[in-house]
Image 1: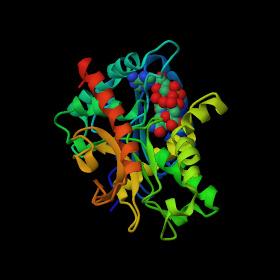
Image 2 (image 1 turned 90 degrees about the vertical axis):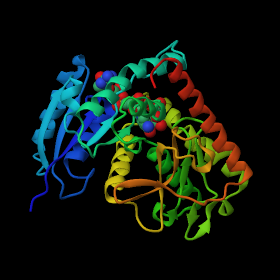
Image 3 (image 1 turned 90 degrees about the horizontal axis):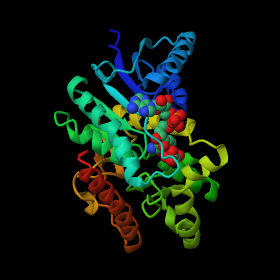
Length: 328
Ligand code: NAD
Ligand code: LMR
């Protein structure tokens, strides 16, 4: 029997990530080759026309799995019955804007979106926040959707994870497929901690295969500041790689992670590894039966502890700031 279509909402659909993402969703890469999709594109009124242009192109691809496209600037319509919500549109930091201003501006986006998801989405909704500051935007949306289980709100650190795989593969001259158990801890920001002490290359601990100076002074900052390096080089933030990571995150969430490996995702903390409960922080995770689970029992040495704590402290500061603004 043919599968029922899955409703996928993409916010910021006319933006550059949207352009790299929508065609891959419609071709079946988000959910699998036998799952039809209906797309809902949410944009601000000024960008609806551009989203309509993208929709014309989607039609012109004649994707067999694409069963419809709705374009709207109305939150209730955008999230009506949605099963997968990719929250990409966000307010970028502009000149002279302080971090607090940025959090406030994004609160104006993610608070009403959280409420609309609460009121209109399907019972099985899964939310991935890509728009920055992703972890705290996810927290705002989650806090404003009290009827949706908190675990359904996640933020994207899969791009950082993929960057870490690629940097290590380049250093050791091995294919990325030989690297398992990479972890990004903490915030999707320059404080994130890419961890090589649990990563394995052909079964050996990755941290033992590289010089400690390289790990500390090259690997960690290269991964953590890669987003800024791309903005510097391209004059715009990463788009195709961000879309690719969003596809990876949702595909694994829905279809499960491979045995013997794990990935990284920012999910609400249950208190594991000393991360305060409720913070949306990146962890080593597996997906089983459509749910993320934090990998348990990893030993955390002093070096890693310090790095994880620093990133988690930044997340706690962001949470306190949005609390003060009445956003959570
Ligand atoms: P972009 O500026 O090209 O597009 C953003 C789109 O969002 C625009 O079309 C804009 O009209 C729309 N938008 C703004 N407010 C909206 C709202 N309230 N509702 C619906 N749509 C709205 O930006 P982009 O390059 O596509 O990046 C989007 C976001 O993703 C940025 O915040 C960026 O920093 C972030 N990002 C995150 C990661 C990650 O790894 N988590 C990686 C790359 C980029
Ligand atoms: C990235 O990691 O590429 C982005 O989050 C950078 C940004 O600020 O948009």
